[in-house]
Length: 628
Image 1 (spheres, rainbow, N blue to C red):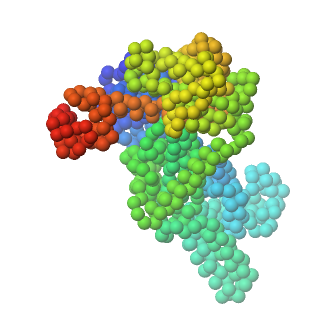
Image 2 (cartoon, rainbow, N blue to C red):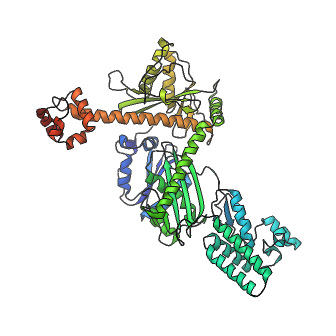
Image 3 (cartoon, rainbow, N blue to C red):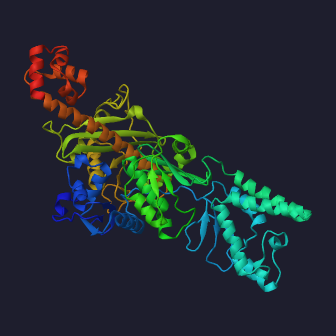
């Protein structure tokens, strides 16, 4: 890995712009935008301890950074979206729908546009409405609407065959198509029908219902009861379509509502599309998180990917509304970016109270339930777990499926406060009672020289008892609960790292006489490395086996960095108290038990500090003097 200091640029402009980090092969790893390029890029080359683990890995994987200066933040946002779509950088947060939703589409680019149901909503020249949760629902809607708006719904082949034969298809005979194929209506008349259907789907339903009712009354007054009966049935059909959408906000209200629920590994999204006070579409999905970004950054990325196709003109689904409601503060340039695309002001805000806030809570509840369902599905689906373990054994050429997987990771800050973690998955699910963490000591008690040496120490301590007395349990520090046994060996030992780490682990196990399969999962391309192999094992994207090893690796990383941060905080606190004369380990423990942090001690009075057992008024005065 490259040292970020080796490629840190010296002269960076202070203008707005977009930057790209590239690896030695020239692949784009990360794309970002900035109001001030110099200030933003400086953050990437600061103390690695301040970076989240994903970005820290990214800057060490890259070997150069490039940037492009633009005039405004809105231009920067547009260019950032374009580059993310073009290069698909693996370190950027990407929301991918886990299913395809059906849309009702109008092929406006054709001379005789047709209405059809599709799951692909990105073809230029079409206008899309939805998405709908179920295909049967949109087909029922289309069947009802064709009574009132008899537009063409047949394929190109059926249309051309009917035109050659001079005879319409069945829909033309039952008045659910105006039959432009045989000239019953002109292209202009058919286009008018299509425009009216589009206006109805866009939310202008009440106008059309009132119009049909008016025609029904006129027909009845003329005693044209047959026409009146048909128009009555048309009104019923339009109302049934309208009743499918719940009225939740005042008439005239148009907005999109985004809700988010997250955990360490996943992000769940729910989107409500409200037009004229009605929820005309709803969809949601659960995606894997690529890092521990804040909710605001996740929502900003979500909005860019949700509205990006509309900005490009490739997808007009339901357009960009006047108001976008979000659960967290987003990038301030999102609003101007959407306003420019809509050619009218778009407000992006967090609802604080009232009906919109209640609807946001409803959407959030849906996101939380979807997240829980996804976790339960993957955790409780015995078939999926069994398939993942079987596939993993095949990819790694193991004799048996690894029913017990142990994964190790090392976390530190520039070599200090080194911590190793061990997490255990049995039958594809976490076994938290067997989790361990190890404070890496090294030969001098100050830690090891690098990650491979630290990993070697952790494995020696893990398997020490196994080499001496296999019948005795090995105990260590648990993340929670009491020490317990984990004497038997794993079916697979997984390392968070690449070829150097897996070779170091294999060498250590060989010295200890431990015959356990070992592999390392590299974050850069999510590839598995085996000891002394020249090329990695590539598991197909979307595979349950890959998802399993990613979950195991990410859990090991979470445990390691959580323990490391706790140890670092305790060490920094202790270093401050160590400088105070008369305050030994016992009094330090008493002070921390009472005040928790050094900051709280600084805010305390001498009298409050003197109340701590073992601290009198004289020593309290000394402590206050040193701290303040």
